[in-house]
Image (cartoon, rainbow, N blue to C red; front, side):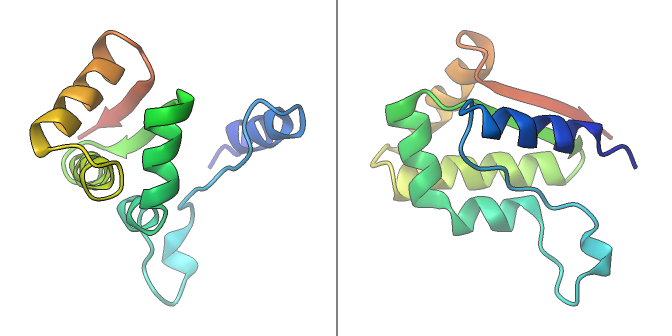
Length: 110
């Protein structure tokens, strides 16, 4: 596994480009499975605030058959439950972030 991006992102945090890096690497070594969508749900309030009020960028990398869909659903739920958007507004926001704003980037494969 290549950890260069992780080290690079930690360096950008030190320069104030972002304040937190959360990942779900090597989950097979954990006693309880923790997936990205679980972390999104856990941090739903902060993510909704960052996305809606601070122009956050969201990068999702991984399995397109299951994980990416579940992470997308968790992001949408965060915008509804914590951001006060309707389902339609949350869906439109994620679509706009991906297509027009380029703030929701998904590097997925099946």
